[in-house]
Each structure stands twice: as structure tokens, then as C-alpha cells.
Length: 378
Image 1 (cartoon, one colour):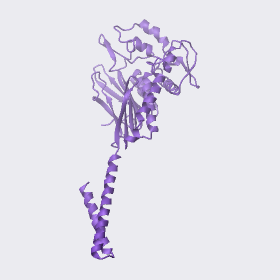
Image 2 (cartoon, helix red, strand yellow):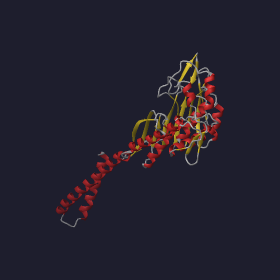
Image 3 (cartoon, rainbow, N blue to C red):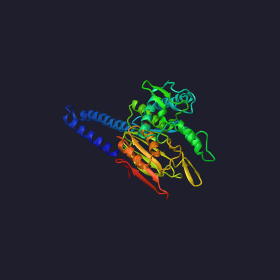
Image 4 (cartoon, rainbow, N blue to C red):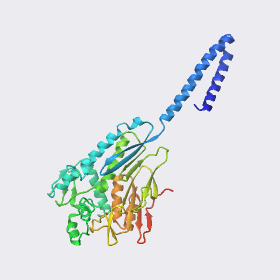
């Protein structure tokens, strides 16, 4: 026990003891004995009370608990701030269950998922009923497709495969213009019909979907909802770099997120900018990790679905802050495809959305361009 508290407790006991002796109607000797017994008991009760108070304060201090695992071909990490480990009992199981449901809807690696069954359809205008998860992501995808004027497109994957960034693996040469032109008519999110009754159909039987550039963000949003349902308000959810931050850290400060320096040799701790998140989502897209070079020219995995070629706009990284991670995830990819001025214009006109675009100039120098209210920390 703290010595100061102990002395204060004894002083209080002696003061009460003195008052009891002065008011005691019994003979002084008997009164002193009774008083000693009473005061000893009182002192013990006070000390016990203080010890219990201190113990309770320590056991209920806010702490961060880490929950992690694998999903969507990557790692998820969740930090939960709680006063008691009992509050997070069973939370991981609920998170894993929810992630399994989302994968069963939108994983192209699961042959029996909803998106796989949709891709296998060969007949145009044949509607299939889809789950709430699939429907929500498709309507969000449609919005981002229209906002970006086709810069984001969930049907671009055949071009990604053609350039060697998909399941087929790396190419030894560049695809020909003929190959690209042959595929372009098979690309276009407007070839998908989304009905209000959760029905999905194709205008062309050959159209396929890949929602990997938005599904992780949706997964983050859904896990955040699971945690909120557990009456936990302070947490950080991350799936493969896509993030939602709620409340505060255990030290009472805002969650801080580092934007990685967009260099191929940059380590995880090589931070270019820092941002604070206040009940906000965060997503980053970049071309500095996944690319190849031919004759000194870099070809990125970010494919412009409108041209069929990897982007050559100088943009190497885009970070988006938004109210939800589904939107942030999709927008980060869309702005990567757009020209700098177009990307900034789009971000600035969307309510609750901020962004940072980093470009690399021919001399290798990095320059960043922020939206009107994008703020970075020290």
C-alpha cells in the first residue's frame, strides 16, 4: 500500500479513537480497551477498503487486446480496448463466422461462392438471387464505377490476367495490342444488371466479376459492426491494410496510421505521412510493390479498364479517408487510375471524403497532393 495512504488511514483511526475516548461514558480503562478494539477494527476496514479500491482500479484499467487471423488471402488484425478480458470472450469466433459468410459470397477462390456461380453463368439476362452482402457491395461498386467514370471497374480482371498479374502468373513478354483490343469489349461494369429485388444478371454472358479491390473494405465495415454489437466502442480493424478506427486508444488518444513511403524497397516502418483517424475508415492503393519492367519501362498491376493498359499517370500511391471502408477501398483504386487533377476533383466534391495522392516524377522524387481538409500528424 502507498505509505501516504497508510499514514492517512492511521491518522484517521487515531482521530476517531480520541473522539471515542473523550465521549465514552464507561470508566477510562474499560473505555480504552473497547476503543482499541473498535479502532483496530475500523482501521482494518478502512485499509481493506482502500486496498480493494486500488485493486479494482488496476483490474479495470483500459487495455488493448489483439485479435488476428487470416482471411481473403491476407491477414486481419483487430485491436480492442476494454477494461476487462471478459468483454471480448467469444468475439473472435463471431468475427471468424462473419468473415466466412463474406468469403462465401465474394471469394473467387471458392468455387461455390456466389460470385463464382455468377461468373460461371453463360446466359445473358438470366437473373440470380444474391445475398444482402453481395447486393450491398454491388450497389457500392456501381456507385464508385459511376463516380469515377469507369476508372474503377469490377470486370477488369481478364485484363489483369492478360498482363500477368492474375492467377495465370507472370508473362515473359508484353501482351499485343490485338490481345488487348479483343478483351476490351468484355470489360464494363455497366454490362451488369442489379435489380432492386437483389437479382443480378449479365448483359453479356462472357462478363465476369472480381471485387477484390472493394471486398476487403466491406469486410472491415462488417467486422466493425460485429464489435459494436458487443458494446465495444474503442477499436481498430485492419484487413490487408484497409482500416476502420473507432473511439480512442487505451491512452485516450486518437488512432494513428502511417502511410508507407511508396518505394519498392520501403520497409513497414518507413512512414511517409501520419494521419489520425476519428471514427473513420482508411484505405491505400499503390503500384510500387506489384509491377515488372521491360526495357526500363515499369508496368504496374493497376490496369486502366478503359484502355486495357497499366496506368502511366505518375501516381504511385493514393490514401483515402471516408466514413466507411467499402467506399475508401474502392475510391483508392479508382483515383490510382485517374489523372492527378481528376482524382483530387473527385475527392474534394465527395462529402466526408479526404485523400492524399503521391506522384513520382521522372527524376524519382516524390510529391504529395492533399484534398482540401486532409490533415497529417507530426
